[in-house]
Image 1 (cartoon, chains in turn blue, cyan):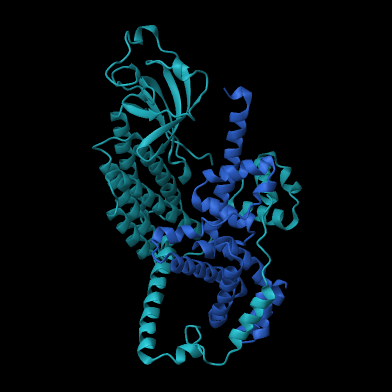
Image 2 (cartoon, chains in turn yellow, cyan; image 1 turned 180 degrees about the horizontal axis):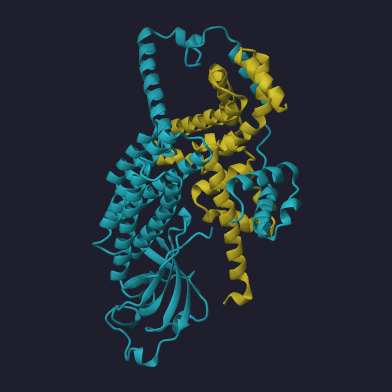
Length: 187
Length: 377
């Protein structure tokens, strides 16, 4: 579905056209399912959270301004559903733990098939501050858009671009440092 | 750093969409960035197990097709719930309401942690910070938190400045949020510097100096965008003053600890670098687990790298360059290099016997230099 088709489906869904909403689901469900799955690690549970996310989205779609805003909003609903799931599961959860949930999920990186240069970068990512690491992960490993990342992290798109900029430059510097320290002339 | 955040974002977007980065590789200055983006793009990903998306779709469409049984919050009253005795429904309602309130409270607080001045939810963030401070176990943890919160204020100011640049914030809005951020910087910087003076801890003080450098850079940038004589500009001047005072106090305390802080150009450091320090100075004490420069102790571990010597070759009086990381109360040496061997007349005649396991010992006289980590921009 291109932007125009998405806009059209969005407008129809706002007028309670369920089939149009179904097309919106078809457009977003695959990516959103992966987002949820990597955070709960269970297929059926991820499907349940996905369904609940879209049902909630349907009830409020008329208050969303644009398809772009709707995209980010979907991720925000999904994120809240995931947090709710962990809250219920763990019975008592402190605030910091809730924040950590979305950062401690299983890795979408295929560890077994990493080449040396991939592994170096993945390892160096651990030296990045958490928000930078998270933005890189969302952007490159889960291929999320800035608006989606912004909604998930509760920041603006501008802030996401700034964090991304810092993260990539920092990674570049870390790679250079590692190369220099590995060089036999460094001592 | 040759690209702006917007340029880099556009580059990443194109690289992800087309996979072709050749146009960007023409500029040698961009080679490093291009390589990193290419590597990140090509890292193999795991796939989630295939979901039955059609079944989920039907489930959703079934639910949203149901007639007006739907309550105002989007939930559906099931037949089972309807046949429950009245008292159970009331109890269920109370539990449900409590759950929703709890969920909202936690959800609000989570969102608040990421908010910036000017947002309705922002006061909650400050409240959470205040509670965290009150719950701190000891002074060190408290100071660490204050440094973290002062960093938050600077990050928020940066975001607001960026918004202003892009014309996404009105003059009035900017003035208000700048005033909020400035107040935060003043409060936290003063508190941090003040609370560190009784017990000089080089690791904490180094963080403060890094923080104040960052504050100065961001505030200076903010001043450039403000008109002379405005309220916002006056506030920024005060914040700059507070930041400078905090830095001076921190440096004074580092020097009291026997070290000298090198004069550094203004740089914005990365938050992740706050725990790293580089120190150079004469060794004043060595034992099996630690070494000291001045009266600042550094822990030596099995992972410590020795650039041009072995641990056994270390001598009191030798000038060494140390790269270290602070974790909790200790500073761990990651790498040590002797830059100047100990002069023969400075070597002690006998090994220090007062401290168990000590190899050599000398009075804690200063001579070290602390280099504050900086982020190359």
